[in-house]
Amino acid sequence: MACGYWGKILKINLENLNISVDYPDDLFYRTYMGGACLGAYYLLKEMPPGIDAFDPANIMVFSPGIATGARGPGLARHTVITKSPLSGGIGESQAEGLWGSELKRAGWDAIVISGRAQTPIYISISDSTVSFKSAEELWGKSVADVHGSIVSDSGDPGTRVAVIGQAGENMVRYASIITDLAFAHNRLGVGAVMGSKNLKAISVRGTMDVCVSDPVSLESLNDFFSKHFSENSVSQATHEFGMGGLATGLCRDGLVASRNYRSSFMPGVEKALNSENILSHNAGDINCFNCPQACQKKTTAPGLSDTPYAAPELELLCMFGSNCGIPEYSKLLEINELCYSYGLDRNSTGSVIAFVMDAWDRGLIDQDHLSGIELGDEIPAFGNGDAALALIHAIALRRGLGAILAEGTQRAAAVLGNKFLDLAVQSKGVELPAHDPRTKAMLGLGYAISPIGPSTEVVEHDTDFDETAPVWMIHQNHTMGVLRPMRADILDEYKTGLAYRLQQVFSFMDSLCLCIFAFVPVRFLQYHHISTLLQAVCGWDISLFELMQLGRRRITMFRVFNLREGLSARDDWLPEKVFQPIPDGPRKGQKMDKSALRRAIKDYYTLAGWDRDTGVPTRVSLAELDISWCNEYL
Image (cartoon, rainbow, N blue to C red; front, top):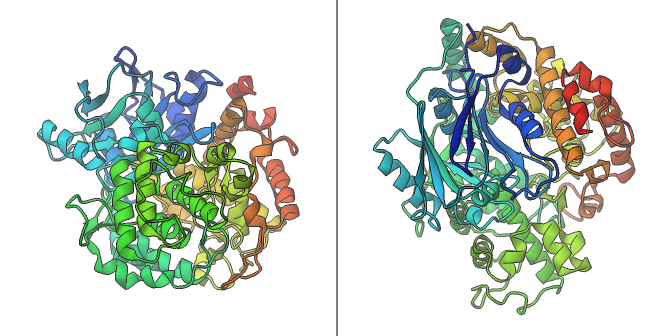
């Protein structure tokens, strides 16, 4: 008997509120293993090609991994996958927490949603019971208000809720989905697609234990992780300070975007983001399912509501603190609460506001552009937190200039004029994360070729393997061919090959929904622990080779989807700003090299079994990965 999964996938058509169930066989689960790979299968098979992301025929897949819900370490993630309204290609966004595990404990391996409800609704799942409830009175309300109302109506405080805010309702192209007030599907506009379907929320309550093949081995691995995870210095830092605690060092070392990518260093901002300041505003731990690390923290500060949103994470602190130049931690707390309340991707929102501040600084926009936005006497200059708050309101509610900014920087620049184009720091229409690729060349390659657009989790960061990195980070990646320190800002053939391998690692973890804050490349649990974990849960004798193939399968299926939707090798590129040298700070003079990037992209295509010029997967590469059925989409 197979363990870890139920063999049941829930399918919902919102157009007619029809419910059906797929019963895949064991080979299906061994091939796709849940998460992002399973989601890509349904998008390719069941979504018509070439439709708009807001078309009712667009499909959303909510998918945990095959082992999610079992009481093992690092098994708390789930993914949402759809056609992205931001990139027009594949849109995948992962979140930690409790929701994905609850779905598995309700007896479902995934939910596939299509259609558009006639009026606002939410889906309620309690084990095998699936019902539809009116959300008309919830429409227009904040994430916290809706969450509280749904949990109260359920009569069960253990109910887990995934909800959109007003940004999703108004189809802001980078709207997010918030689960349990603390965990966010931030990227690619998955919340906007949910809003386009008139779907306000999905609540889940599960009471069943997920089948485990070897409970004794699983418990042993749990004990090992609980007792020793803090021996990993990165895990210890996030356990003590939360994810925001990593911002101080990144800002100090000049590794994150500053002033809309004008630089990678913002003098003085590290004082606002210092660990002690962050710790003084933390108000307790927020644990993911069965995990003692507690990387998320509750937050408290004067002026904030009593709503227990999670504390600011790394991306918010860097995108608003450094990239927008806002040096006040109290103001960053307000921005964090507002992004949660509206359901906005903090990464793209920070980038869009930095785009406006950059344009204001260059004299490209004036007060006339800002009519309809309640700025008062404020101006959107770098460092102005109050102006940032006003712009967030305008974006989420699509007021004035906010309606244009809600489209993302690529589309906004196209509307505002040619002078704005170089200020849009994006690739495939997706705003770059805070981590500056000029300082991490391998990460820059990952940003360029990633099917979902630039993501901090597409590949391990170069600085974890450079001359300043702890020796143990290199030693525990000998398996991946990391044998020596290397310069972080150089992109040579060796780094290209390493990027190809490490991207597969992050890719198979996205398919398994394993938490990167628990596992390699640089967290506590090692590659062999992943095989041990899956054998304990599923009973599979699974090798690292099979996992790497899973990673390649996901990436290749994503590539096929993007090609089918009109993206091409021309989209595998980076914005002009990252080819300009950093003007100041610890990384002064560093930049991405255009010729090195062009060569690396072609070399990557070759390693992946794709055409060196077009990036189209070859028939033999699809056959090797047992996805020859994808040929029909090329």
